[in-house]
Length: 272
Image (cartoon, rainbow, N blue to C red; front, side):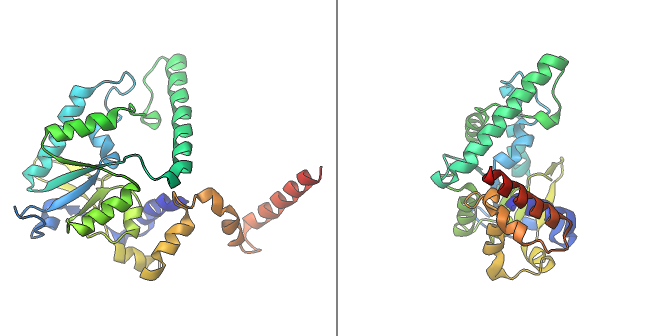
């Protein structure tokens, strides 16, 4: 499942924890700056589909004019709602996340091979399932937002932990992202980047209610961190928790026989 599986579970099974909202209406009255504008911290990676998404000619690459127009529209939409945004980008990362980085790079190489294979064999444009943005897109997005007068930050360690700490420390109105880490961290408001919808009059999205989620899961606040760790995180990879998950299965569970069979098979291999 992994920690991100919690996000998918909540969206699919906890309707009380998910609420479609108008950002301007929700943030009205939350004075986070001296200018009176509420400030939202935005996870740039989670908003990539709004900035350089699969609708661009990403296979040929270099659609920078289109990307710049998307960034200008994104920025202007929030300013029209009298909402200030701060863009947060993922930086070098913590050395303890090296396992996650290696796994990600291997997945990207495999995806690149699939894209090249599709183009060579089918002579057609790959679908959204194979979407793979240019590696330089983060650097270009940083420069684009800076040119629009938006404050840009880059993480030095764990991106989501830094965003949560910055949001709480500076008394910001909330975060826009799409990661279950923010269901664990107690931020003022967690808005979905995946459900962002822009119109001439408003910006709507989904807001996740942490308290409602905990009630649905019958989970106490003191157990949230432990629960998240047992799901699998970048510091405790899901692969390392395999034996723990197997031990949770009762003897009557259908997969229990598979578990026993696997152990017998491995034991026989070791005896060869």
